[in-house]
Length: 554
Image 1 (spheres, one colour):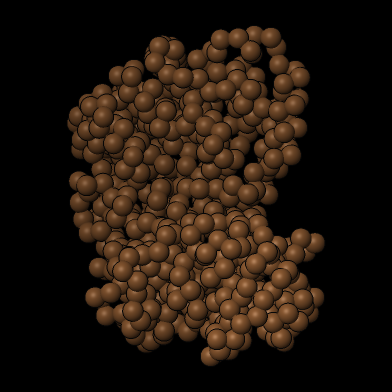
Image 2 (image 1 turned 120 degrees about the horizontal axis):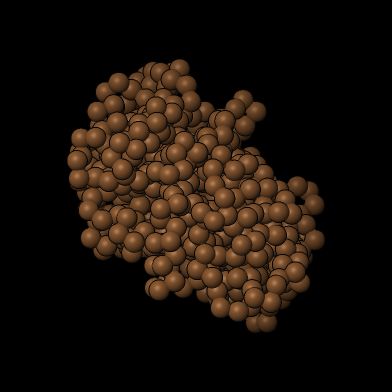
């Protein structure tokens, strides 16, 4: 062993560099061990690479390259003016998972290390998957981008201007200031037709379902999309509501089939961006749902999922604007701001307002009055619009980076649902979804397969896929997350020639959210996604090498 101390790293801390192999790899391994063992706590500042190079007798470029690679992998962070620090995260993966990250990826070899033991993998894997290092779960916004300063300014203004009754017992209806602000905002941005009296403040979509179940408006049977959140189906089942799956195709839920279910009086839809497969509900399907509700005396429950974040398509208005008396609109700030705020709203038909207020007043807690007043000011001051625009640009860049990485290193994988939202669906070869999810876990990724969202009674074949969220990982580790994702994907089983033909065919299919095939129309599975290619100006993540001054985060 070649041993040296680096006194600048902390008291009684030594780095032990193996005598074999490259000096950079040995230094990276020693730093990983120090972080994993707790000797370098999150936030600890490392010495400048020049100082560490002098202490260890290494070339400056060797230390700089090691720092840059560990930044790209997510072990370290580097910002101008604050130096290089240990990244704020827990339970990093074993070094054996990361040691080959410095080598350039090649499409033909992406999957040789991804299979768990017993499945033909070339490299020996640990006995169980590592704890997740990269969070690629859907539905989670970038918490680091919460507009703290603007929100604090709104909170101060709201607290100063708040009437005395705002500090008394709450109103189940919600603060009038917020309901007025929401009525104006939703009319302007989403085409919702309402006044403040028809808006009831709640804590989110699940809360709205519980309130509606308490009124009896959801009794009997309800139609839901064949792919959606199982948690919502569980809430309905707990309220005695049996759900009936509606098949999906390239135009969204097949609402024209609602008439074939005589016991159904409610349908739950995500028309702005179908969750999780992506894509808006076609205009004729929207009209069919409204016509059915009018004829049946039923109710369309509209979950405006990811309605704010669109990138490559025109805005899609709310279905509620077609018929406010038969469509109940639900929205929240869980994706646009933070799920921690627990702020949402229901835009109700007139006939349901008093019933929902009665249930909420008797059984449910209320949302913080100060948070309601703050959100009202945030909307009226323009802060909410500015934040949405800023995050739309940020998430679009993330989306482009994901698509570019897949195009460069896994061109046989097709991507859908990327014209809007905070996640993408990666279409996989049939029968490979479960192994891909397991391989992702071995790579330290937290993500889910498309099967997790399939209704248990859905008919037709399941389309294998991964649901990949791209909003949550911090910037310094996003490239490493994409690297690990590419390694977890199954190989191109079709072969180079077939793969090229498939890509050409997909490129001619058009938009990722509008493409579909004739034989998918009768399937309960999601529409077959079209291949998505990055714009010509978009490039895969650049090689992770620091400038001559100091290492930087990728």
